Image 1 (cartoon, rainbow, N blue to C red):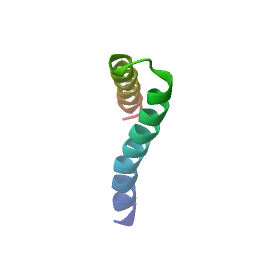
Image 2 (image 1 turned 90 degrees about the horizontal axis):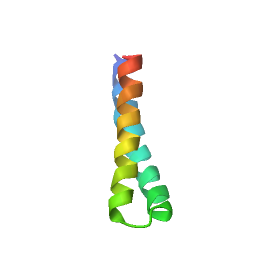
Image 3 (image 1 turned 90 degrees about the vertical axis):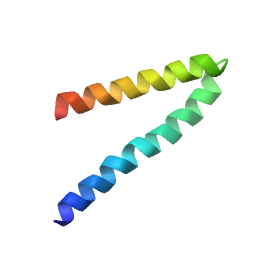
Image 4 (image 1 turned 120 degrees about the horizontal axis):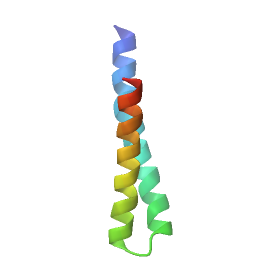
Length: 55
């Protein structure tokens, strides 16, 4: 039962930490809000693709 709780915690923590980290990096790299949004969208698509391949 503890493994299920741990995996759920990681399943929520990793995307949230990644979102904050990616947002910080993107704000520094992107010239404006639209490219920043596009970069975050690409990151989320990559995360979803990895999840689909693993799961």
